[in-house]
Length: 158
Image (cartoon, rainbow, N blue to C red; front, side, top):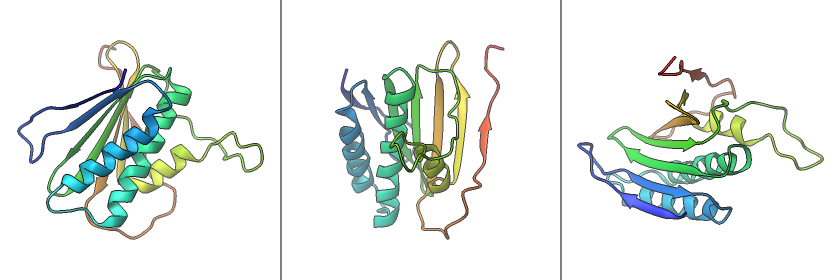
């Protein structure tokens, strides 16, 4: 399933939605993020646009590797931020682990996402799965240590 849909909202720019379930979707998700960044006015800084593409790529990769393969990506923007939302079928929140420098088994993505975003939340789905919301401000900011916060909200039907 490889669908890209643009829907309209009351916000400053309609969100872009990509639904995918294949490894080929990772470069597609990056390209969608870059095209979305290029379409924004005022334009994102080149650094913020590349950060957006990297965050989207990492979230899509995590959904494919750890969450059953199917995900829905939504990109939206306000005057001060770009928002990335990824919904998948696994209810478990992302788990931080020590990156593997020798065997190539990963462990870098979630830490990187937390460091590159200004705010990230994980919300359990009403039935199965979860949704990850990440926010990037439009203007560059100083680097901060990888101590970003994560909030996990209670299941809505609990």
